[in-house]
Structure formats: C-alpha cells, structure tokens
Image (cartoon, rainbow, N blue to C red; front, side, top):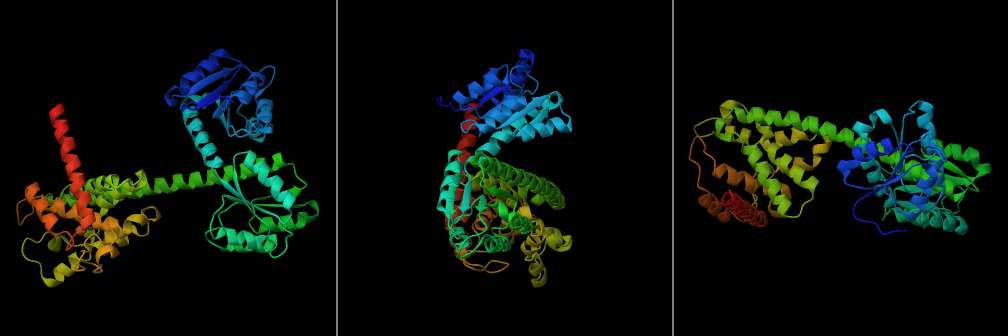
Length: 465
Ligand SMILES: [Fe+2]
C-alpha cells in the first residue's frame, strides 16, 4: 500500500461523472485528497492498493453495484476497516437496511447530500479513528480460541488482552478498562455467568459491551446471558470474520450511544450555561460597579489555564467557572450587597454565604460538576483565614486559587463605591505582597506571566496599527 499524506483520502464511486463532480465540490471544505471510480469493481481495485479513510459510494451502478461493492470491501481484511457512506437516490427503508447489512457505516439520500455530506464524513472518520484505538478483552479457557480470536482482532487494528477464566479477567480489570469483552461461558475457576454478574454489578464496568461466545448446544445459556445484559452472542465454531463484524457493530452502536449522550449533555450544558449567564448579567446589572467583573475574571482564569498547558475543555471550564464564580450573590439581598456603609457582623456573615449558595446552584447540573469547587472556594485564603471552610494552602482546589488571584486583581483595578480603582502597577504590587498569605504563590506567578504576555501582545497590536 502507498504511504499516506497528512490529508484524509476519500474514494468517490459513482457511474455519473456529473454526480462525482458535484460530490467532490461538496467535499471541498474538508480539504481532502479525492480519487474517483465509476463502479464498484474499479473502486475495489483502488481500495485494495490505497489506504482510504472513507469511501462514498452510489448504489445503482453497472458492472458492480454499491451493495456488492460494500460487501466485498467488508469481506477483505485489507479494506474491512474503511468506513463506507452510501449516497443514493434510493432511500426507502428497505434500501437503507440493505446498505447497512452490507456493512455501510452511514446512508445518505442524494437530496440531503448538500447539507449533510461533510458532517457525515467527519463523523465516520472520527468513529473509525476511535475504533482503531480500542481494546478488546478475550476470555476463554481454550488456548486455541484465545489465539485465533486475538489474531483476528489484531489483524483488524484492535488491541487485545486475554484471560483464561472469569477470575483472571477480573484481576486484569483492576488495571485496565477494555472497550468490549468477549467471553466464553463454560470455564473453570469462574464461569461466564458469574463473570458477567460481577462485571454488571460494578458501576465502573457495567457499561462495557459484553459479547458471549459459546458452543451451539449452549444456546439456552446464551439467551440467559442476554437477560444478564450481554450485548450479543455468537455460536462456536464461528468464522473470525463474523466475529469481527459483530465486534465492529457492537462498538459502533456503543459509539453512537455515547455520541448521542455526549450531544445531549452538551446541549443541556449550553442551555443551562445560557440561563445562568443571563442570571449573572442580571446580577451585575444591579450594580454598575461590578458590571463585567465575572466576564473579566473568567477571561483571566482561562488565560492562566492556557498558559499552564491545560487542554481546550479545561480552558472552557475555567472560563465558565470564572464567569459564574459569584453566581451565589443572587441569594443575597440588595440592601446588604450594595450597602454603602460598614457591614454588621450578621450582614458580613450573609455575604460570606455566596460561595456556598453558588455551589448549591451549580451542583445539580452534571456537566458543571468540575467547576463547583472553584465557585465554592474562591474566597479561601492560603493562610486558612478565608471562607467558607477556612481551607489552607494546597487543600484549596487549584482553580479556586486561580480565581482568587483573578478576582482580587480585577476588583483592585475597578472603581468601587468606597474607593477609586488602583492603577495596574499598584494592584500588581499588592498582589505580590499577598503571596503566601491570601494568595497562592504559584498562581500569582502564573498570573504575572499572563499579564506580561497580554500586555506585550497588546503592545505589539498597538505598534502594528
Ligand atoms: Fe466572590
């Protein structure tokens, strides 16, 4: 096979040159290499010699149609892993089913290709990449079966671990969580039933798809395993290709389930974040002095996280946590929150409740779990004199320590009813002085790096203008 370039390679198979041209135009935004073929037979020869990332195929073609083409691709070890998207004018339920049975990864009607083709291609490539890194656990007391199954799976790009019985498999599960388990039923020491039962009862393993492989005479037992939550069963002796297709299908179903669950969580999170952010805006609108404070704190914390090498998700969460750090102030009455004179002891006690109220607002939202501590502890101090829990030093969650620095800096450099804003140099000096007392020394250093980077970037911007 040829060496691959960094761009993805896509094979477009259709007997109509005009349709191939229009599909190629649709794929332009993806910046991929495209090879064309006018029927399944030519496509099959090309696929055998070139490592394509995706194949897009028509169904109704002369010489070899799309269904046979798809089946042939799935029958050959060297092309089996290439995802196929069928794009066809036929889109009855029967046509779609035929496509999937032949091994297609997705099916798209020609009418919808314009809006959906690029997204489908991205989705199947992501899925194929995801599947290639997956680990399959093979549990069987027969060395021959373990060997054959392991070889077959590894030839198809999967990683494998093997065990001779349920007990050995349980020991392996202490160190590794496989993406799928293939298990025999009749084994010494711990049989498949007991093994399945334990896997199912443990929260951390219960979501691993479980395929049972056993002798034909055990059909009743296999059905019992399905009742125990096994995903599928396959009768011995089986053809290894059959098993690989079953593994692929099970993982693909699992991927789609996780994918949709992730999408659902993301949309729930976006909805929640939009409502909470509008609450923060409403909260800050009550007071001209704090307008934009939360947004600024979020920006600084996410900038500090980016400098510390955090990944994109962590940076996004930091931004969100910063934006929401004072959300609990919603539960404090205006007469206390905006009081101009000195606060009484009781009033100050109420103000000190805002981190706990904020954490209580965010806690029930699963996708915001990792920012709850940041909100709850942003007023702790390194010397333990902060609130609400008087945590000391490294006991204070890191993101809360970062928020404390950002919060202090932005408050110092903003006007307040009782004082004018400090200049930046004075604020930085005061922050330096609080190192180790109020503020975390590491977070202060990171913050100073952030300030330096940002001011040099804005200076460059100014010079360039
Ligand atoms: Fe606060």
